[in-house]
Image (tube, rainbow, N blue to C red):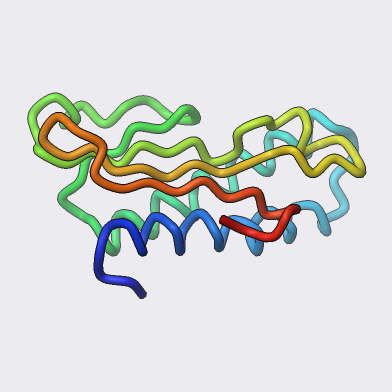
Length: 121
């Protein structure tokens, strides 16, 4: 696993494809269920990876309540596990993305956006 923040963000965003493509392979019926499964599975994946590799970072995510530490710690991981969730749930659409960033001491320190259907970051 990468040790610097930029490489970690890139790795996590790129690995989104594996997680989200697996969601699309499951027998899920209907776009609302597919959207919910994509959001949940990738949120869980990112949360677990960040807890393992950056346990001292607070995490802000569109999918869950904000970590209350984000106001007091110097490092905050900011994620949008599945941007364009509606598009993800529509067959043939490739215009959805995953965002992973690090905010450190008042500035953007690292970030990555992956579009898995279009080949990664």
